[in-house]
Image (tube, rainbow, N blue to C red; front, side):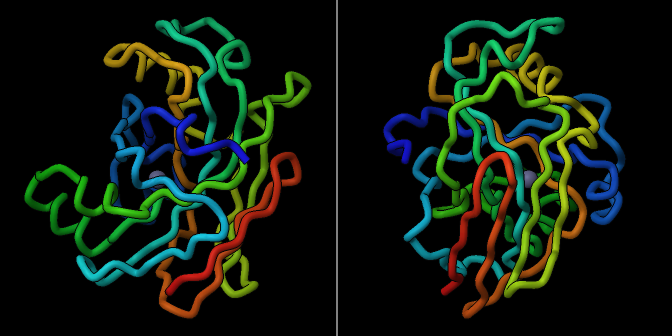
Length: 210
Ligand code: ZN
C-alpha cells in the first residue's frame, strides 16, 4: 500500500461525465472544473466511512484516480502516461444537500466536498504502459447492488486535458493525485451500508459506512 505521506495535493475534476452532469442538472463545462481536497481527507481500506453530522445526504462518487510521478508543467500534446506513476480508484464523497445549498448561493464547495474523511482511496497500482488510459472500466456497488459503471473513455475531458488545465494554475509535483470525475448513478449512503469499487485493471476496494 502506498503510504499516505506519498500523497501531496488532491485535485478533483468535477462534471467530467455527460450523464452525471445531467443527473445533477448541471450545464456541460467548457473546461475541466477543478477543486481540491486537503490531503488529510484521504484514507484507505480498513478505516470506515463516517456519515458526518455536518450534512444529511452523503453521496458516493466513484472515480478513477491517478498519481503524478514528476514535477513540471504538463502541456497539451504530451502523453499522460509519461507523468502518471500509479493509479487507483477512489470515492469523492459529497454532502449533496450542502453542495446544492452552496451552489445556489454561488459559494465554494469545500464544506460539501472536502470535509474530514471525504476521500477514501484504494491501493495504488503501478502505471502499466500497456493499458489504454481511455479504456479503464470500473464499477461501484452498494450492498451488492450495482450503482455506477464507468469507462474513462466516456470522460468529457480526457486525462491529458485535465492535467493541462491543472498545470495552468499549479505546477505538478510528485505525489499529486487527481480524481478524474464520476459517471452517472451517484447516490446516498447510510450507516450500515457497504460500498465496493472495483476495476479489473486496478483492484477491488470495500468500506463500511458507520
Ligand atoms: Zn467527483
